[in-house]
Image (cartoon, rainbow, N blue to C red; front, side, top):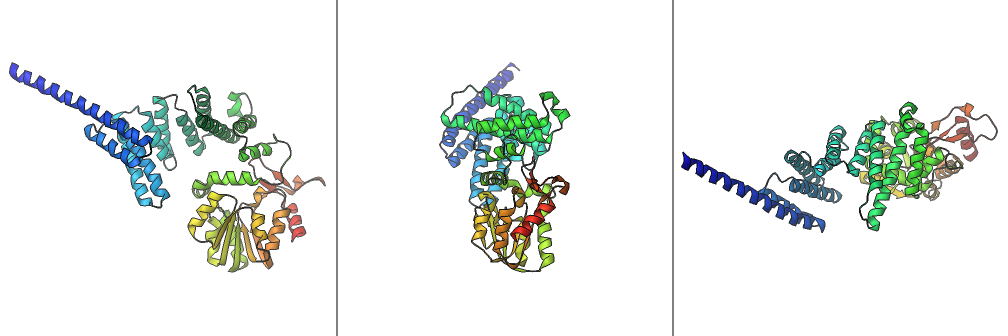
Amino acid sequence: MKIIFSIFLLLSNFQQTSADLNRVKAYDIYVEGNELYNVGDLEGAAKKYKEALKHDNTHADSLTNLASVQQDLSYTKAANGNRSEAKKLLKQAISNYKKAIDSNPYHSMAHFNLAVLLHDDHTDDAITHYLSAVEADPTMADAFSNLGAAYHKLDNFELAVENYLEAIDLFLETDEAEDEEATQNRLQYLAALHERSGEAFLKMTDNVCEEYGHNCQKMAIDHFTASLDFNPENAIVEHRLKALGVISGEPKESSREYISQLFDSFADTFDSDLEELGYTTPWDIASEAFNIKQSYRFVIDVGCGTGLLGKLVRKGAERLEGVDLSEKMARKAKELEIYDQIEVGDLTDFLAKREGKADLITAADVLVYNGDLSKILNRCFKSLQTDGILVFNLEKIPDGYCETDQCTGWQLLSTGRFAHTKLYVDAVAEANH
């Protein structure tokens, strides 16, 4: 009995020593993988992390970094058009992040990176992992920032603000030595967080904002102002402050910089976001156009965006051209391969080159970024043939809004879009036709 017991102890000690050696070996190989990752050798890093996992398949850091490499590789594959391989790599990344969390439930980076992958399509699950990330590491500013964005996506503006403000405090408290690039990145983060906070405050009610000591609009203005201080070149925030009456002088139209920046920021999720909102404007415009005529020779889709309207009018257009100020939106439209030509640039410049050519011009949610419609309508009419048709939409304000001779007939709303009276639109169309 004593002999058997001694043999068991020796065997147990040997197994423990072997496991310890494997963990040490796994860590050493993991470090080699990190060195390759840091110099951009993703394939080499992946091989090292997989080798480390052969020695210790529960090594959470190797699982996390392998998943991170797979995530990076998937983006490269997608950019090169290999979408099937990109999806396969993302599935592998998600699986490895989950394995890392199983091995170490308090692995903040595994939770955070997994949440990023789940953010768009599984937002509730993403929130769970962001919460786990900040529980494991309460100094993780990026996790608080993304957690705020996830709540914002779900229209939970109160929790969005709460987490944005936590992220702002953490970014301001950083005492790490920074190079110039890191400092600039941090300032851009702060600018974005203040902008998002301002947007969220505008969606909240004053009784909720009372705990902050001011009404919601005042809080929004304070955060937009702070955002502009951190990034004076943000045309979106500048336009917001004009719409809220903080920057004097109501503009007659939105700046090119504002429109370009605004829609570049929307491009990746534009179609899905509008689908969630039940957006029907392109269908309404196409229906109106085809109720007048069944087919057109030359159609110009101004402010074509991602091509939502273009897809609807293509069937009845012999030639279809589009123009948009947003390069990213225009790129999405080009991918559809339905336009005969697409240009990135100013609408009036584009139309000026096509005087008297179009028999249909469409504009879905384009003229809402102009207060004074004289210039854009004049240019549209000049680009139409004699019997050409212009179909567009606007936001309407009551005719009673204009009670004096000085009334412009249009108003810049707090949303950053313009609204118009029907009397004004009829008058300016008649004057420029």
